[in-house]
Image (cartoon, rainbow, N blue to C red; front, side):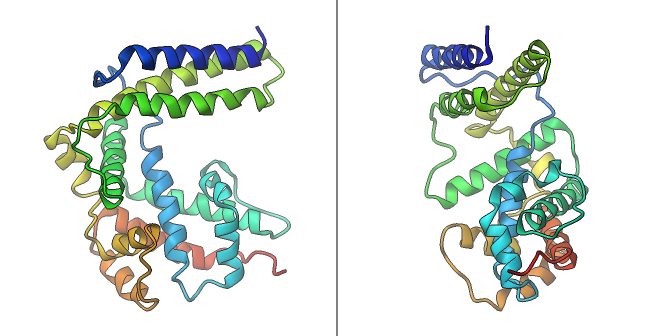
Length: 262
């Protein structure tokens, strides 16, 4: 079986599973994969870019590099320290790597289950800001499955390792982990365990922190006064782990090697 056929067959299998489940709520997953926490990380990286737009200590070239190459920022955690020619792409990669490091430094606790609930907390906050009711029952698992099908259909465009069988085995492992993670997210999203939310989230994320409000307002096109960032940064030092990580991320971005001026 070639990789194109594998991608389509696995996608169809996932779609069939979603159709069978219909409106039913997903059952809690028996295992939470290590990949839990990536949703919070992606939101955090986007929030750091939003804050950068208010930072008068960053140049327009640096801000353009961050907004023109968002995928480089999000993939930065996978990149080694940049070297050689200074470009906007390399600046964005370095920014993502450093911001990701700041978040991971402040995650406490940092178990897969804790990261899962931190994902849920940010998802629910963003949903509420968008006017949705996170507590309203919905086929969340089916929605996540549908998105996942679209992602996996694109796998046939990737260049596999020389050992195609080893590559396919890796894809199967990734598919299983993703399925279990989607199930865990769906199970916790509409009915999170209150005790676990308190244990894993209360110290990690507080949507009332001024610095988080600045980023979230920018996300929903509610631009705040430019001079609000310094006071928000100062207050964030006594805020949640997420807020403190944002302060260190902003300070780290200011110290990055500048991108090539064009």
